[in-house]
Amino acid sequence: MRILGFLRTSGVTWTSWIRQTSPVVGVEAVQCMRSARKDSCRRNANFVGFGVKSERMCDLKKVRSCRSCSTQAVRVKCWRCKHPLHDSPVFFCSACKVVQPPGDGASFFNIMSCDVSFAVDTKALQRRYLQLQRSLHPDNFSQKSVEEQEYSQHQSALVNKAYKTLLKPLSRGLYMLELEGMRIDEGTDSGADADLLMELMEINEELAEARTAEEADKISRDTKGKLSVLTEKIDAALRTGELHAAKALLAQMKYFSNIEDKVKEKLSDLM
Ligand SMILES: [Zn+2]
Image (cartoon, rainbow, N blue to C red; front, top):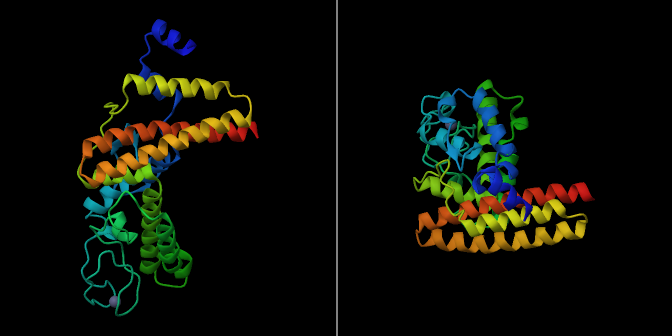
């Protein structure tokens, strides 16, 4: 355990070491910050989840509170023919069939026609995604009015984000906690007790020392096993409304998801 010796002598805490060696700011977070800069709703783009600015959370905030944005305004009538719109979310007017701007209040689960559940049927999610994108893709609107082009772009982007958020267990679980009004604040490190941090360090060390694809593959299988057990536990906690337990388990899932990403990188290096 060379790392442990290093930590003892350097005064670096386990938590900060794990953060440094398992960077948690992923592509999504960077994209979020980029898109937030372009977005007129930038005041809503600073949600911090596990110390990570999250595209998913930015969206949730926008959907919930960005009433001042022209494309997110609450509409109960078709913008074109004024026909009343009852569904939420509504993508097209039932009377004139024209694409509508994204409305306020529809959750990603509503958008993807899923029950609010951690045990999402990912095949059904994918079918719904393809079905929505077939009708909403901006390419279909290139000959239409400026409004229709703009609304289709916004709807299509929203569907993309809803799909991406619900597809992965980690982002799905964090989103569910957010729907329940729970914030995952920076620096809490919930679920990261000493035993877990020790285990993570050992896995990281093992991964750093892996010299063959077989060695890396074994770590990959072990990590998948851990994630599978965590998925079951998180599902059970969310079903019974144990939100704090779910939050702690999601924190653990985040650590193992980071390891999974690192194993993938290692495997591609070894191939
Ligand atoms: Zn209409």
